Image (cartoon, rainbow, N blue to C red; front, side):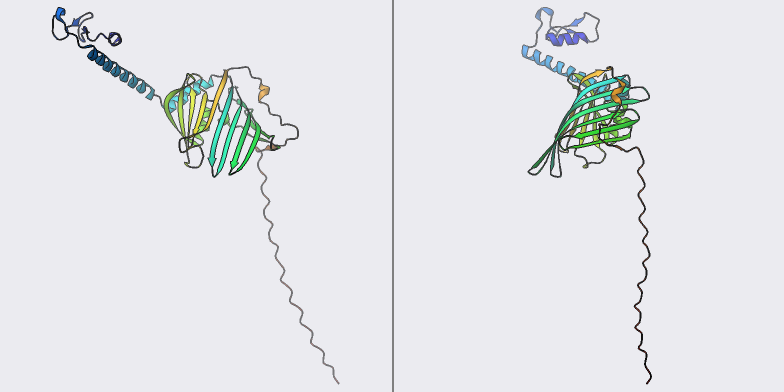
Length: 320
């Protein structure tokens, strides 16, 4: 086989050709003529022959690569990504989010950037997300812009969310039970989060900024409900974390793009980073407590029957 490619590269098929079944070093003559009177194909025919053979070799090589990639299944890829992700003790990264959607006459444009941190303590996973967000909403000729900051901290037991809509003057904090699927970043938790609303399918591998990636397609369980009709998640093959998520609408237009950059594996993260303290004056809405049962409606009181008006007394007849 190396001899075959060497001949393709050097253009020597018009000369002597190695015997396919002979011993090393044996050659056959071209056209049955003696060596001294050997006739060679024309230069044009020789180049055409070389081009065809090399193209066939290229097609075979591509077919072999495609066959090897097809051996991967969604289950095997998920297992590989999970194995790589679980090796990390901690992860830190920056991210950006761009979103442009239109639904029911409302145009919404969002741009955000933030920081993601993850801490793996074995039986307990913690994460922290901080994000600055700008949203512009347009309805007809009216436009409203809102700037806000958001923070999510999951300490492995409770998930705290804090939103400060500075431009609107609203602050809100909530406490809920920890949700492992919200950890994000990669691994099994990422697949659990995707499966909550999407049917998943493995697509051919691609690269993101020269990094080989598995590509997982997601389509909504309920079609036509969400503005995002299709997503592509790009997972780093070596590190098991997601590098990019792209969302498309029903027409195939990109409406959402999220990218992770400046990724650090196993950085030193203090446990204090995963402790939530509500800002002064902000009341935390505790969603872990069961809601009080609503008061039963008051039973209607029986109404007394109206009294009949007293009959007028008959005048007493006087006797003469």
